[in-house]
Length: 244
Image (cartoon, rainbow, N blue to C red):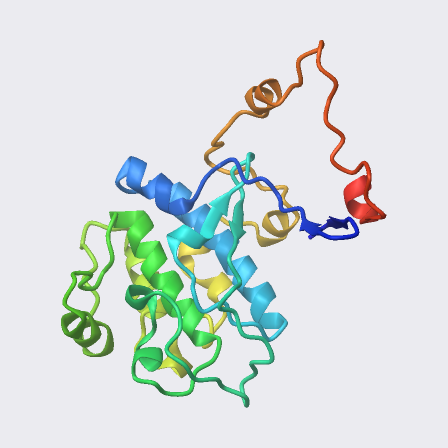
């Protein structure tokens, strides 16, 4: 994240993600088609594996915290609840996150690790595909707790068979057997058409482009008669990556 500073203030410059949140996309469409679900899920998998590879657990994976850039690629945001230093031998505790996306082991106040993010992904996949969570999401917390910790997910039979299987394996109650922790999630049949190397190098074409770059460029042009504001003038330090 590039930054710049004056004598009294420091500014962190964040990427503008004009595609909006995955939550907004789901609300607008009701649900997403299988190609969109497959692509977004695969990119989230890459993001989670990157975080977990650095011993970081996000702990708040949900559609609100998944954004789309102008090209339609995924960004995982809001690391405010993330915890680093988490390994297979160093679990953490604490009921942290968004209630209806929390894994059973979190609600039961047990030690947990990276498996909690894979559980949350299972909820996200279900919401993308059906428009709703596979568990009770009403206001009665005891019912929600019981559904998550003891109930089986409600997965519509009309969903693609491979997608059903993916959701079930992500929502495994036992964290050590949950897909993402147990087995290679990239080898699941739901991702047969995904080219992982192309995906990681941003060579894969997203199925949906939120805003055409030409439109965004037009809207952000400065009028010719006005002098463009120089955001880095007057500062004693400017990150080289931002100045470029």
